[in-house]
Each structure stands twice: as structure tokens, then as C-alpha cells.
Length: 252
Length: 252
Image (cartoon, rainbow over all chains, first blue to last red; front, side, top):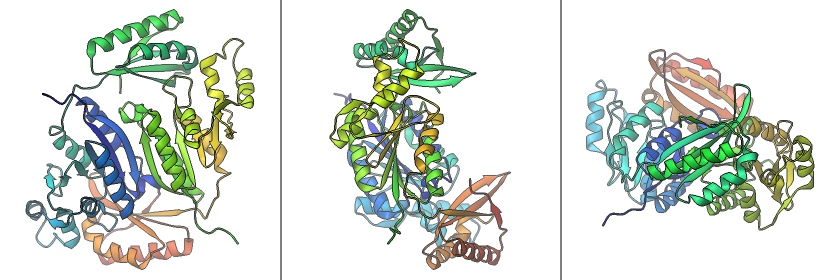
């Protein structure tokens, strides 16, 4: 017997810098695309401040609700990096200095450079497994169904790529996007009827303004390739019936 | 007597396109910067799927916890636009067709073009006030402490700018950022002590890689300008004591 239900996930972006507007998050989009590619459903994301109670509550809410939780940010050496102790608290376990992480960091730093602040980056909740990458000696970690990753995008990507293979993959979610210069309001009724006819295809409508012209991207997503192809065919027929143009465009 | 406590806020980004990875959100950053500028504290953001129960629950959780909630997305004419009925449901009121919205849309469309789908954009919860802009006839709305805005960035910005003046402003949060080529781990202990000494200044540390060199941006945020200036002076002295360079950089 195989579990046919797709795995679900949430992302927790931890950091005042996103909420203050200093930093534009780009990690969520990378994780979202990566999960779609392996058939894991990203159902929710939250941005939380560097405040213990808020991080602990968000970790506990999300790890109970979803199969996987991915956190980004807050695992560096400075006082505003509180993710690791918060995850330990959420799981009700202690933090400990992971010997393997210490060994890797001892190798990476010059003698005398591995100070107390840097050693904090070797501290993980008891029971956690390290997420190791070639881009930094300071690891991320997996604790239960929670994957704790760095906030710096290049490091986050390496950590996510390192754990992706370990997730319960399902059929990838395939996307096709048809652009038309018909406005959304002209398409809406027929498009809703098409969605009714294809309950296994998720259909979204996104207005755009390109090269001086308004238009609409109609995005269809499904795991069943032939069904998706049939829905796209029906969508093209619908657009043509409404007197519009239809051009397939790459899904970013 | 004036209420000295700064107002708090949350942002709800509503839309499958963010969670699927199709779209990179840029609205949160705009709202975050706008709120910081008028002294409203953005405490949380959530990205939720186009699923009624999830939107209703998120609206209710956030409107109870914060002074203001800003939603983006899901107020267009297509079947995946469910924000307005969800907000009505969250408040336990009916949706109605707002006469002023209908009138504005009648003016904007050619005769015969204002079909049922487009008229959905004139439906708001009973008791809601319209958020009108010059960029589109279809309005956003305010219901209680919840501001419902479009997802298209240009429209969202116009709507946010239209309501910003109505929020309870406080002293703006001022930010200063000092860049140094000292690594985070070298600064961490002294920087934590500086944070201890200035409880009214929020201090964050963000590593960077620029022009082939690693470094750290140290960001100090406070509403009290002289206090902030003094903390920056102490930060510069600290960096110099540690043998580092210090260059003030614009805060994005």
C-alpha cells in the first residue's frame, strides 16, 4: 500500500529584516518552486519577528498542521539569531553542541577564531540531524519534521537542495500558462465553468500589463499530464470562442 | 491623554500563485516600508492559499491580534478571487453590491461590458468602506480594522497609499546601517553587549558578499533620533576597537 496523499508543507521566514522592509525575501519563491517540482504542496508561509514566543508558537502550529516545515533565517552567531533555541523549546528538548558541527567548524576556522559566538552555530536541539553543505561549515538541521535553514539565499538554497531528496515526493505539479489579451472580466464566467468541469486541475487567472497592453495569464496546474493537456485544449477553444488570442507562455 | 503604544499590523498575502512559486511577492516589502515610515509596527505576515476556511481563519486570527490587517490579492472577477466573501464571513456579515462601486464601474466600462463577473468586484461586506484610487474603478475596501487590497502591485500600492493617512501614526521608525568587513562571528559578543545597553534600539546583523568580499551590515532601528545617533557612535567605536572598517550605508 502506498500513501497517495501528497505531502504538505509550510515555510517560516524568521527575521525582523523582512518585516521592517529592509530585506526583500527571495527564499520563499525558491522553496515553493522546489516543492512543486517534487509534488509536495506548500500550503502556507509565515513571516515572524525575532521574538521567542512568536517563533515557538509558529513552529508548533505549523509542525502540527503540515508534513514538513522549512524555516529560513536566525541561525547565525549574533544575538538576533534565535531560531535554534526556539525550535528546541518548541520540541521541549535541550540545545546541545553537536560534535560533528564543532569538528567541521574547527577545520574551517583559523586557530583562535572559533569563539563562543561562532560555536553557537554548532548548537542544535537534542535529537536533531545536521544539514551539511559545501558552502559553509555552520550547518542547518532537521528536527522531527522541521528543517532549519539559513536566511542568506545562497546558503539557504544549498541547504534546501541537500534535503530535498529526503522528502516524501509525489507526482510533480505540472503548470501550463496561456496568455490572452482578453480581460479577466470577459473570461471569468466561462473560466469558472471550465474549473467546474476539471476539479483535479487548479485554475488561476492573473492580469498583466506588458508592452503597453493589458491581458490575462490563465494558469492550469495538475499532476495528471493528459488531463492537464485536455484542459488546456478546452481553454484554448474557450478563448477562441470569446474572440481572443491565446499564446502559451513559460511558467516562471 | 494620548495612546503612546505604537499601532501593530499584519499582512495577509492571499493567493495560490505565491505558494506555487509562479509569482514572487513584492507587496509585503512595500507595505513594510510604508508602515515603518509612519511608525506602525508590522509584526507578522502570512501567505495563505485561495481556500475559504484558511482565509477566514487567518483574517480572524490577525484582526484579533493586531490593530490593522492588510490583505493583498483575490479581489478580481474570476472564480479564484474569494477574498471579499471570506472577509464577510470572518466578520459574520453578508456581502452586498456597493452602489458607489457599481456607479464607478458603470462609468468605467463600455455599455454591455459590466457583466456579472465584473460586478462581483463591486461586492463588499455590509458595513465596509470603499478604498478608491485613480488607477482602477474596482475598489478595495476597509472592514473594521481589515484593509482589503488588490494583488497587482501597481493597484495595491495606490490602495495602500490611499489609506495610509487614515492609520494611527506614531513616531517613524528610523534606521541606520553600518557596514564593516569584520565577520559576524568577530562582532557578535560586543554587539550583543551593545544591544543590552540600548534596550530601546533594535539591533540586527546581516552578513553580505559584495564585490568579492564578505562583510556584515549592522542595522540599528529606533524612534528616538538622538538615542539612535548615540548608539551608532558607540557601534562605530566598537568596530574600531575590533580593528574593523565602518561605512554608513543607505537603508533600502
